[in-house]
Length: 324
Image 1 (tube, rainbow, N blue to C red):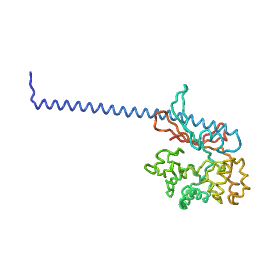
Image 2 (image 1 turned 180 degrees about the horizontal axis):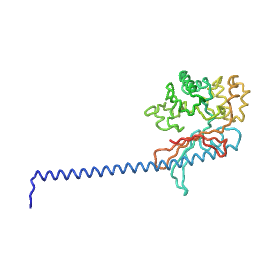
Image 3 (image 1 turned 90 degrees about the vertical axis):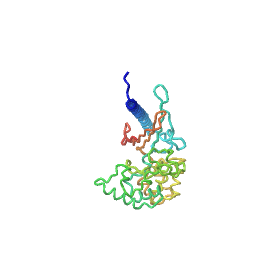
Image 4 (image 1 turned 120 degrees about the vertical axis):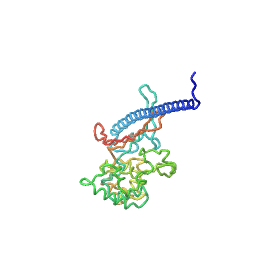
């Protein structure tokens, strides 16, 4: 039998170990890559399934908006488009079932009256300044002037096409713009109520603090629904006092306004506030913001759709659609 020197045996052993190590590394890399690819595929499938649930939820919301239009000629928080999807002013969670009744996911639907917001294109500089102050409680005269100049620069029509265009303005404070709802889902998430342990900055008061983006719109004709406008919007009206805004909110909680003209004779409103309401006040809307969050069972990530629906059309027309 041929004998090999010890150093040659050692070299063969080292080479063999190296080959084994090399092949093991390749196997591990392939295994790791396969696991990653499997996770990516699985997540993609989950996202697509969540998207289908979200799309179904949007059309469910549209059906409710269509049915509600037949109920009365004014829009308020007593309407089915609001009451069906909210409980104690919080968005409800619904289970999504397949054709055989198995629960395969969940969704949330939030419908908002777009006329509860102020149109950034039709609002005067005073209105914009008043509203931003109500949101931030700070002097934002420089920001308001920058918005005015930005609108003037948009020739020939001078139209801001998205509220998010305001982020192009250097003077716009991003914290004031976003508020605590940086993912725009209108829902208080864990990271939005931990007192700045993570972004965004928040006060940890258990309430979602809204930003400028949540009070402005570009879709309406400028009319503001007195039944759905927030107290901050009402306080932005020229000549409106805190007592006047609170009185409007208290009155509509007991009996929604069926006609904006009923406010004309209200003694708690100044002449200036009355004039604004006569010109820009309304009690109905055909434009609604539909915010849907959906996910499949066992998944951590939600799929979000934000749509603006115009129910003056038959069938209802979607004029804006965004998926996150």
